Amino acid sequence: MKTLSIIIPCYNEEEVIKESYNRTKQTIIRLPNTTEIIYVNDGSCDNTRLLLNEIADADPRVKVIHFSRNFGHQPAVTAGINRCKSDLAIVMDADLQDPPELIPQILALQEKEQANVVYCVRKSREGDHFFKRLTAKMFYRVMNSMSEVKFPLDTGDFRLIDRKIMDEFCRLKERGKYIRGLISWIGFRQVPFYYKHEARAAGRTKYPLNKMLRFASNALIYFSNKPLKLSISLGFAAVILGLILAAWFTLGKIYGFSNAESGWTSTVSLIIFFGGVQLLTVGVLGQYIGVLFNEIKARPEYIVEEERNF
Ligand code: UDP
Ligand code: MG
Image 1 (cartoon, rainbow, N blue to C red):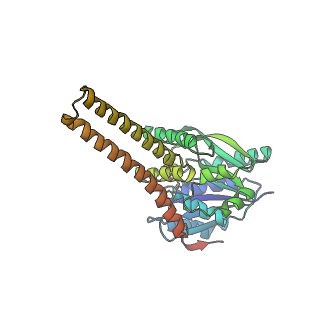
Image 2: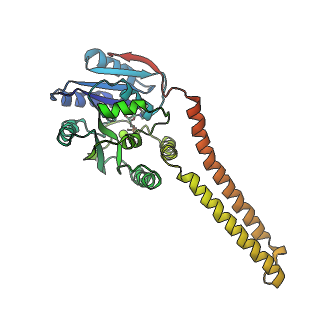
Image 3: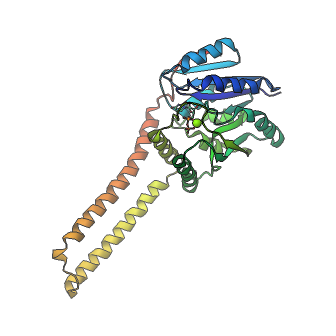
């Protein structure tokens, strides 16, 4: 029988962690597999740390990694995968939006299909408000059209991965990990599992707008150089427009159909237009340089302060 780890990143989840643990435990005690839960406390500043330690002290199947500060959701999942020794791992959120009761069905599908990855596709997003649903839908579609790798749509990090995938994942050296993208990129046999994304059981989202935007732009930059190519196209378009306008004004002067001297509006519009194009392209370039800079610094993705039950 294959061994299983359930990897759960937690950031300020004191309202939900007990219920989350209880429901997960109820599910895993019925599994024939030897199962452990790896909680990664991503530098929570509420009672999450205390609660997780209590849970780990009472249940040896629970392992806990405490980060030295908040490093982010993706580094937390990465830490869980790095520390996992089991044959299979399931990554899920602490907030019960990904119901732990689905684990037996996911395992059954993996067995039946002999899959290396079972990725969970959100048929519906119960708890999320309109704005989140819309932006998430747009994000997955834009990502897919921009990236060389094709990703399954409407799929978060809730998925099962096997040892092969974990080993390949641990070989990846990049620091800005967009995990769901990287797992698609790794390949092997990946099958979908459709489920209903529930409402958050308690507490508030730990992904406010600014974090969401950073997450999205990071994903795009790591998986696509189309923004760079787009800035070339934009530059070309601007140059051609410039040439046409120059010809228009010159000919207009010769044949008298435009009085360019009094063209304050056109001059100012052009300055603004080209200024904008330049700033935009430099900005896009800057984003990539920023990522290069971060990668070159080669700092670790996260720092562990303490581990329990490992
Ligand atoms: N999370 C984390 N570090 C962060 C932000 C979030 O470990 O900096 C965890 C969080 O505790 C949860 C999961 O990542 O288990 C997903 O976060 P959340 O449910 O708040 O995101 P949403 O579902 O609203 O997109
Ligand atoms: Mg959530």
